[in-house]
Length: 198
Image (tube, rainbow, N blue to C red; front, side, top):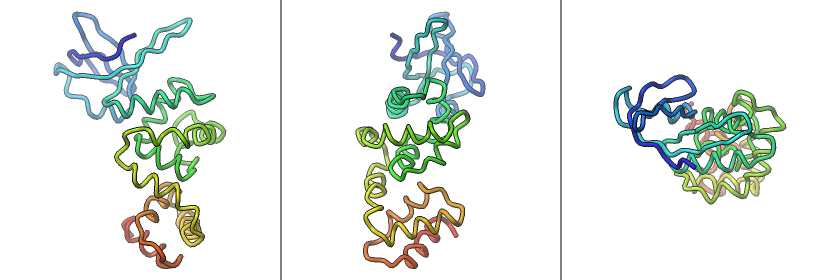
């Protein structure tokens, strides 16, 4: 098992990077987030890796940090989500955005990833709702608040109103979670719209 690679970046494409280590070029499939953090070709680079072994191929997946790698491992354990589908999700949603989508049951945000249907998105939410909390995600406190938003009827109504205005459920839930307690539905919506930049 190859745990990590440290070497020279040969090239970076839309879906992968090639890193030369000891004269050997390793092709690593990467998320758009990881690819965006790579230096210019010819510079030294370090990636954590996950090696997927199939009957007909051995593929290497590269990650810029441990949070993304851990998130990837959780995704490939979800029924119906393979290595490339997991990478597609992480190319569409950063780990913290994925955690918010799962916490707020925003299957549409997950479904926005190429190759992910509604059933797959719902399966991700179902199987990861109790697992993402263990990850070191920057927005962990917000995720916990979002998970509790459903207990307040006014907050639920405010989120529904924001979704009807075209916002994703996770964005709406994140904005509402930051609002103070005891606000009416109308005040929550006003607060959220201000927070969302309107």
